[in-house]
Length: 350
Image 1 (tube, rainbow, N blue to C red):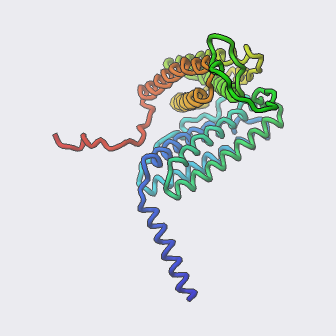
Image 2 (tube, rainbow, N blue to C red):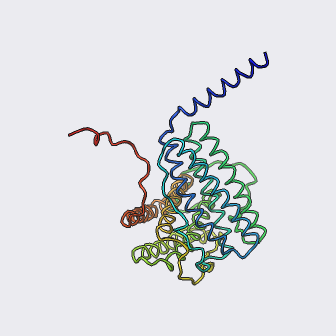
Image 3 (cartoon, helix red, strand yellow):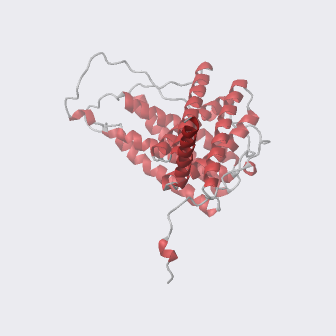
């Protein structure tokens, strides 16, 4: 009886494994794995450079943890695509990295940057988990998401311990329940404006903070870029980030609410690039995508009309900037073609 039970269990497990292997990856599963491979290869290069330049022991430990996560996930995702005979994207390698380049950013900026890497990892992998059905893929994203959450906790605690974590603004907590009584709740341009809600303050704070970090990053990239059109693109991005920070900050200042700090002073005067221009340009396109997502989410949680107007007015600027970045990648032959549907018409003999 015991051996019969073992045989039944073995047969069942083998059947389940075979069943899993026979289920092809969906378009969503292929694309999220493919995209994650490229972004992880980029992140690995950036983190290797940060690790080589770290002067603070705690920062070095945090960067090591982030690098380990990035490399492990890259290896796991690559193995899945290989097992499905799917072409592995070239992504970024040590050829896109110059660890001997002088220091470009401070350790404080690097810690904040690692927190943003964790944030992007949490967002992208939770979205990937949502659209994935195959058991092994869901397990991969479950584990990946847990790793990014842990990294976010570590980076947050480190920023707090060093006294450089900037908390979102405080508000006086409500002491009673109330309901909106008229349409003036939506008023923004004309008439008496109501105070900002906690969610609206949070969205403004996050968008200022991310633009501030992005502006400092692009400042560094612009001063080490050698190709003129790429350098001009980075300078334009710096100006765009500054414009958006000004608009959002003015809303908070008008209501006597604190605004996040800038990170411009955390960029050194080095003009020697630690990364290939292909990597830097691709990185900025990733940040553009994150900004577009954040603005879309902010519109949905900001009922005051002037705020919705700011977001919808500024969003096209990012969309145009993002499109121009992709055009530059294509122009220089740096953009890998993502997985796409079969062009059935091209298969028909004319």
